[in-house]
Length: 108
View 1: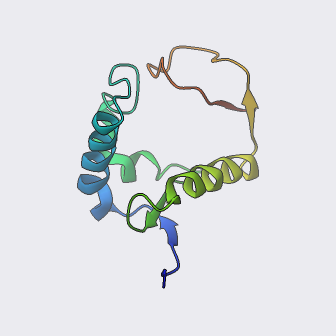
View 2 (view 1 turned 90 degrees about the vertical axis):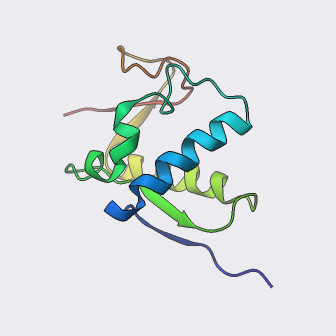
């Protein structure tokens, strides 16, 4: 029997584990380290980064390998749209995340 996945907003105590998990998953999947969240210094304080108004970072309390990552990405994109972001077909500027494939914009 599978237990339900709990999605919640990031907490300060998640910082160390999240940064470690992100970097571990990137290595496991041979994902680019340069130009991604892997090498972004804000990865070590995601709680602080997402304390800003009109931002949210969702965390899933679940074991890896259960399809939770896809659900989490869908929740993040849906949340961004609720906050007023729209998807773009290409990046607008230089965020430093040069190998990302989802770009969004919030018109102020």
